[in-house]
Image 1: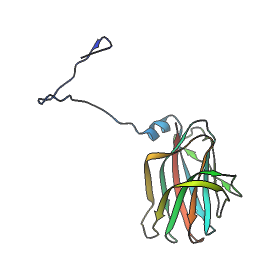
Image 2: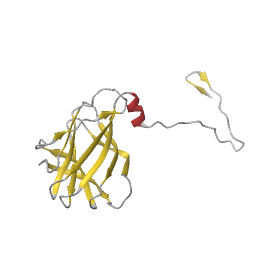
Image 3: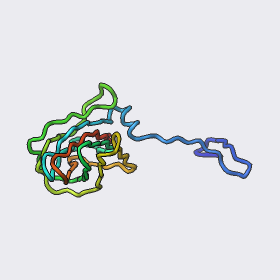
Image 4: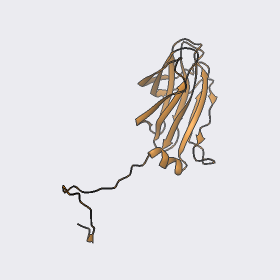
Length: 177
């Protein structure tokens, strides 16, 4: 076979199928190697019947890709909405610092806050609902095959609509591309 003036050989099976060697690369792993993959642990007691208790805003000039979310609760069953496109500034939130998965790597260009109560953000669209089962042993893990993408200057929240005594602990994973 000739491509751009170069000659290449390829193996073919007995039924005339081309033998191919391929590999897949995990975008999050590649981002981690480039010092652009992060995790952010959180521990929140919602404190209100309806509340946005976790806030993440992309302040980088690249897209932020959320690819995994791990959470658990031991208090009661919980339904959580992931909402994107929320507006406003978090009210009385506590800063959460994402950790670079490349140990000692650079800091993430984000605003990230948590609160035991509602941060009073408005608008947005629910892109998915997650159910936490209090009787599930261990963390429940959501791997998003198509990551949730926050373009520059957009935000998302984790929103709870249940008993205010629900404690939710977890870790959100993201990278930039």
